Image (cartoon, rainbow, N blue to C red):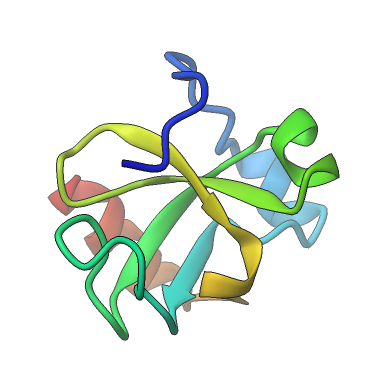
Amino acid sequence: MGSVRKNTKSSGSSSDREAGVARFVLSVRNRDYPASLELRKVYRLLKDEQASRHGQVRVIDESGEDYLYPQEYFVPITLPQAAERAVLKAI
């Protein structure tokens, strides 16, 4: 998988939403991770500044765990509040 380091603490707080920080991403590529990432699926993004400096993002993937993936595999998206609640409830 694309794991470098597991992050056990989610930082997806309401302050992130107010600050305009994306909390979700849409997968647009999965060439090296077809079992872990579904194309065109919404994934929850976890804040990881160190990963960002290395061109990676930390998302909760199909395994239910958070892993690092190349940043270019995703597009940041903003969900309407009702959709965000529904996605977070499903997690």
